[in-house]
Image (cartoon, rainbow, N blue to C red):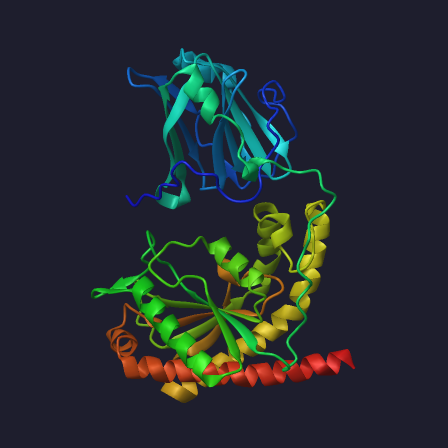
Length: 414
């Protein structure tokens, strides 16, 4: 089983106030629409070396951990984790070192679990590991320590404190490209790190698409008129939603995700270009509204104090403009790749619900360069000359699309 350990870290976003303790009633708080839930009762077990806390989740979520003193407490914060049905009193039956457990909604999008410690304990190991079918397990190991050492290391770090400021400073909304500046292209080599992707006869998808993305970046930069941002530049794991966030922070005009899949059955060959399907768009908006930081849904729009209804309406408005631009982008990519290589799939333009295509305000496409399950495609994909031609086709497509898209933008402004 491949494992992803987050380690003892503070994970994403800003944090929360430090005055916890009795503020959270066990099992109290409004019902959540969380994407992650506990798959069983959390466990607390003492041993001679210390105490272990384990939580099994339906999916990995952002999380953070720190300690507070007076009285000594361990604080765990989670983004979108539903504690419904968890009995904090029952948890303490397995431990003499934890006096009580409280949990509940802390603020919109964040839940908190607080362990009041019967004696000072330090965190010796903490990590979230992934399991099959997208599940995850959080494990925290605690060991006895002195009251002095505990007090010296306790306290919420600056990144774990929310402020009461009325809003946030946002970058100015990026206007649609009109041909008067370089086109910002985000290249997203699929998979990476613990997720190698498909494999065919020793060829690994994550490595292959990274090589192609680096070659394509070089070609675009040499052509001029492009700025290129990569979601990853080496063999590392980047969560799917983080890839879209990278594109938004870069002010992307275009998002291209690069893949080379393998099929268990069938003989598919050739390149295919995907855009987000209409059936998936509503579901995509709902999941984005539930899962993302509110300031990261639409460029230049602060939704941190808005409910799902407002966020969904605004994302739908943005997608109505972006969807036809994505379709035009896909059509240009199909034509460009076919003209340069002659090797496109028999149905080269399709729609699907891929996560990386769900940004409502960025024209996006996923390019399956070929299929590693096909020897013909493997030979093409591992041929540097074929990859160079494919990259040239994509470059030509982007140049053509940018001209057409800019002309439309100018017409709309008049």
